[in-house]
Image (tube, rainbow, N blue to C red; front, side, top):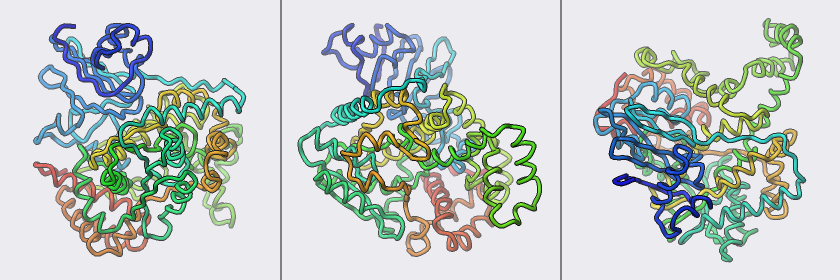
Length: 553
């Protein structure tokens, strides 16, 4: 291993590796020992969030990221060499070419799923993957293939005790320096706030964001949790002026367009925590995706019931009767049955994208012919189908969790939190993504995750004597940023949106006539619905404007 260059970030070697080397050695030595013993399976001998790059003098390179890509890596092959960096723009350089297919992915998903990045020939390691470059050949493959043990049954009381101990240990392991937590008032962040008090013996320093907009504010629940756990509660209300000031800064801080609109509130929350003296903040991300907390899990379970009807009845009677003619749609009370059969007849995961905004508006109505000529719209479904098939889970709930570990966590929510905290100058930890908790989820009976149509049944049952009752029974709303409402009412924010979309016209990605209708008709009539589209187009424009080279389809 002489002259081997290693860059390691994060990760705690497991016991068998610790025993093989000096306990006082640096993480680099741990990784070298792990690779010497396990080769490309070395990440399996490490726990926690990490990225690793090992480069040999002969040009061989091994790199890997953790299960959820909390520590990310990008790569490209140039002149027979593998180059690796944390950010895609570092590898692309100022003259990097923009990939039109990646821009289409962004418009469709509101982010760009790995392995693609916005730059041609620059790729991001997907969560739980490694890359090995040896003898001029690049191999990219998963080192982590989670196994869902759906046949295991254990007494619920035993599971509760184990679960709560893992949660406590997970929070304890994430505390370092001046640590506080985000507090939204949901079950996850409230749990972290309560456990942080138990771990430190001090009131948790909890930070919340609110919006002075009807139907968008959940500060009441954050205050309930803060009172229940005796937290030192800091609340900040984001304003339209904050968006005007923060949008250009946040949009251009990412290495590629990133359209998760919650990033602005997360940034201002992290900024408030940093100004209050925190050096580290704990986030509650992951609980929904490990224990069945998203509304779509119950919704898709309802549609999944249709698949249990014998095929000859579905194809021979129900579908021809309800969807084969226009008559049922005219009968009062039957429209819902028609809609149900239409949706239930579409296989997963395609069914989850039936209400995708870009698809519903019509590609030809939104995108220019020259841009559409450069992309393959069906590739978005190809990606999702590959992910859907790449699991050994049989239950619908676990398959959806697996799907969300990529598209919701690794590609969207975690970059949101990581990017916003990095910009604010804070470290961040994710107790719910502790390896022990993920492994617990893998062997938890899926019927305990979503019981009937009850979301997070086990989670809430295990913590019903710990969390405030109001939060246990609280319905999941998923309130987001009231951008659309504010963009209609607030002159400066509307001007920023209009100017951004005007600049986007020059790129010839979105049709000019559609942009006119979007701003003048659609947004004022339905700000909550069309505000999301204005947002992702505005962020794209801001990001493209910051590039030294203009882009045009």
